[in-house]
Amino acid sequence: MSQLLRLGIAGLGTVGTGVVKIVRQKAPLLTERSGRSIEISAVSARTRDKDRGVNLSSYAWEDDPVALATREDVDVFVELMGGSDGPAKAAVEAALKAGKDVVTANKAMLAHHGQALAALAEAHGAVLRFEAAVAGGIPVIKALTEGLAGNDIERVMGVMNGTCNYILTRMEDGGLTYDEAFAEADALGFLEADPQLDVGGIDAGHKLSLLSSIAFGTQVNFDAVELEGIGSVTIEDIRQAADMGFRIKLLGVARMTGRGLEQSMAPCLVPANSPLGQLQGGTNMVVIEGDQVGQIVMRGAGAGEGPTASAVMGDVMDVARGLRVSTFGRPAASLVEAVPARASTPAPYYLRMTLADKPGALAKVATALGEAGVSINRMRQYGHNDDSAPVLIVTHKTTRNALDQALAAMEATGVVITAPVALRIEEV
Ligand SMILES: NC(=O)C1=CN([C@@H]2O[C@H](COP(=O)(O)OP(=O)(O)OC[C@H]3O[C@@H](n4cnc5c(N)ncnc54)[C@H](O)[C@@H]3O)[C@@H](O)[C@H]2O)C=CC1
Ligand SMILES: N[C@@H](CC=O)C(=O)O
Ligand code: NA
Image (cartoon, rainbow, N blue to C red; front, side, top):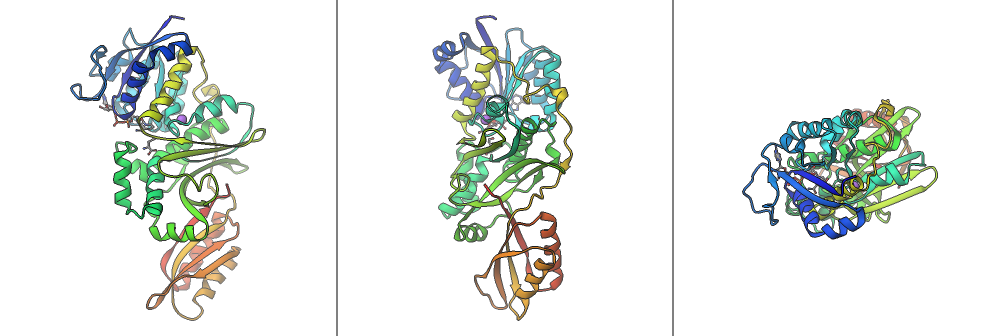
């Protein structure tokens, strides 16, 4: 093994700049820990002449990331551009075909092409690492592929989008509007180039699909993730949930059931005093349950320059040390195609609706629930308008199918004025 490990870095934004800084500032430490000298040979970004607060003059410049990826003096291609297809994918493929190891933070690319890229890496004797892509600075990929390799994983859960958690927290604690909280998340460098990926739950869904693959030995299937963003969460629901001792989180849950692989990313209620309920701001949390280890809770920064660059460097250091773990923790050919299953493990639900304020309205709703086999745990009318009344119901555990049946029956009663908000209460 050569003493020198040469990096080619494509993408010099929030994460890329952070990686350059670590390589420059911590060179002696990195060498001490890996036994190798880690250097940057060349870099690439859209704009060359831009002050990034870091001196790039000693590195070769490539306008074309594919050319960078295949340079003779690059041992590890570090892809930090983003985008599921286009130049990021083309450059990663070119690097792998040239037998170069690849480190990326690009969850969108892996969620869509992870299986093919993992197979390509193996075919060319290269490794493809992506610690930064899931929950940023939290070393969750390493935990699942290495530390927990002796477990059957039973459930993986997580709050994995800093932007969404930041927005929901600031709306509750700071009394900010959605737009104000969004602007703050933007200033902190959390947002994807297309912020709809964040608030639409897509980014978090990408991450969940990657964790599922490692946890359950299945091919990445992002399309099977049931997705709902935070756009439908209102301040009213945040307040009512808080009043009952819950917080609303954009929560990902993956579990393998007898019916197939459940993957859902949706706003859920969690107990306010649970670790997930107490998660504030842009912080992420991943909860893993294994048959031997029990429950593991990992909490930390999921986005931003330092934390994300920290994860990228963790992967680079693994390469430097000669650690060669398969992309999803086992050979790509052995990953099975999971049967996707709708998330319908029984759970309690929070329902909020406005009913016509007339005799028997509440009874009709209760009957609709009862006839679908959904039992009510708590129910209260918490206000009053001219001819309507807002009502909250918390159910006992029920399946999503039974709940949907009840919601359809409620609709047919003619007493429901605004369609019910239905949020799962996840047991954590
Ligand atoms: N910002 C964050 O906190 C986190 C970001 N990520 C991922 O890391 C990657 C990079 O994210 P950021 O640094 O935030 O993005 P950014 O938008 O700040 O930077 C992107 C960089 O890539 C360059 N780039 C984009 N397209 C290019 C092209 N066609 N050719 C050459 N250069 C190109 C841009 O010029 C820029 O330097 C993305 O995949 C993102 O999803 C992952 C975890 C956290
Ligand atoms: N946009 C993402 C960045 C990290 O993956 C987030 O907000 O968490
Ligand atoms: Na991570």
